[in-house]
Image (cartoon, rainbow, N blue to C red; front, side, top):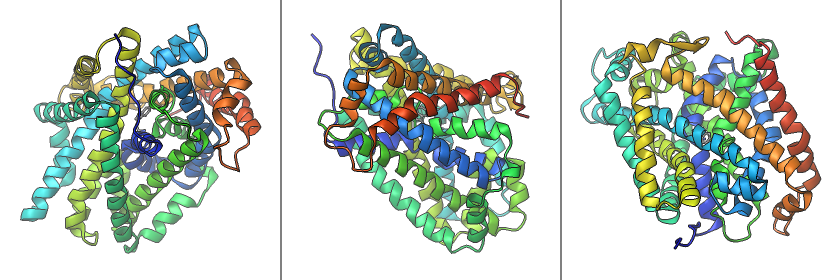
Length: 461
Ligand code: TRP
């Protein structure tokens, strides 16, 4: 006998959980450094265009497939689109599996920096400490990396184990308001710094000469990544919606919140960086380290109220990451529950445990084990971690997303999608025909063009 299918307590609960999934390391860690790498302005504009033209329509598509299918990603695609579409669901589950395995490692770093900054706040910033060296020691210490990832995996598994309503929704309801609060405090502090004007100009003043073709792919890939699209996270979360609330409204809210948070995080970080002489060069040397190398010391030397904001900031990163990792594990777990009749508890433990085996590989790929840190499949992306991230973000998510747009635009009937989006609860600005135009033509053409451009040799390096 199957137990009753889980569902959210309210539509606000769904929106918060989905926003929690969307806001994560993608917003706080990845977006700032890829914006830096791509010289800001034009990249940000292309990214915003991707969010609007591709991200928002697909967000609606995923949620509607989930709500209609009332099952995990494989089951929902099979029942709503057609039996063959289960394979796209499996692609999504595989993608969630890989993504979770390496995402957990970075999430673990936030725990390390929380304990460190807490220590500095309590007993003073150690004189002469080089945060670059600290970072190197941290990531190169295999035992430490495994410990941090293990703690984070256990947190993720526990929340998913508790269930949709008691675990995921409850966490999101508690965490999101805290997250917004901390971010606003940080913003208020950052805007007082003298570099904030330069930061805003860097982010918002486009200069197209500086954007390389590879940057367009990166912007597109990131718009999937940051909105948790392309692998069925939103199909899975959408499958737990019960009451009739506008999918259009909820999607728009999730997308706007995610985008605003990414921009705020970037303004904060760049304000700090531009305020310190020589910091631009230092950051340029290791953009990936922006969050964990450049920022920690600046909290203790430059940022107003930094000694308080430092530890708070890393709590923020950890919480934002946790509301994302649970959504990744939930894709795998809900699929095991729906397709294989396994109980939630067992599914959470078994799949979380299996993912952790791969987390071990990612955790050791920052120097601890040279064979894992050094190999290179994609030019410039050395090591297990970077290879997996490049493959997932730039290949798996865009292809999965393309399949989902085709499913919703070409294989579902007009009546079916219309029924989900136009039900009397949709906002006045919404035009169904425009959505359909985007999901059938604009989004697949954009994603397809970028994939083809890359296959046929756009140079990344
Ligand atoms: N969106 C999250 C972030 O920006 C990461 C994430 C969670 C994700 N679930 C996902 C990315 C599903 C892609 C697909 O950090």
